[in-house]
Image 1 (tube, rainbow, N blue to C red):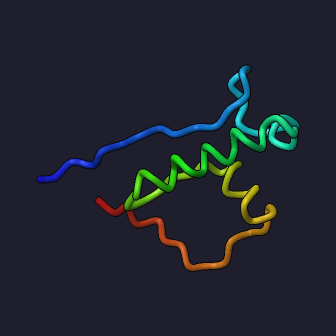
Image 2 (image 1 turned 180 degrees about the vertical axis):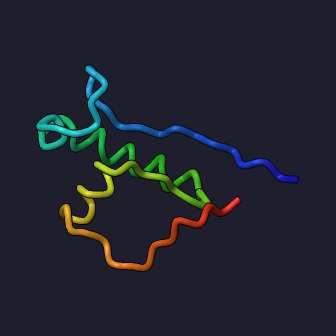
Image 3 (image 1 turned 90 degrees about the vertical axis):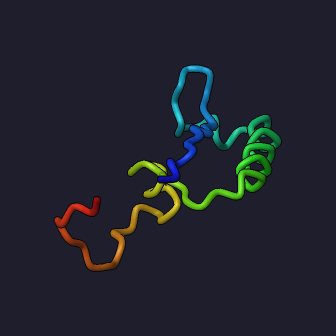
Length: 73
């Protein structure tokens, strides 16, 4: 069985927060670009985002789709 290789690749403020005003600062832009470049180089088969990050990507809109309570193992 091939086990997944997991990397936690996180852009955060010095206080550990992953959202907030620091993401809009001029000094964060170059770091954000480097974060994206590294993420691209991973050639990942999948990405996992938390609820808050996902909501930021979707503008806090409720996602459309069909959901199931079935657990996939």
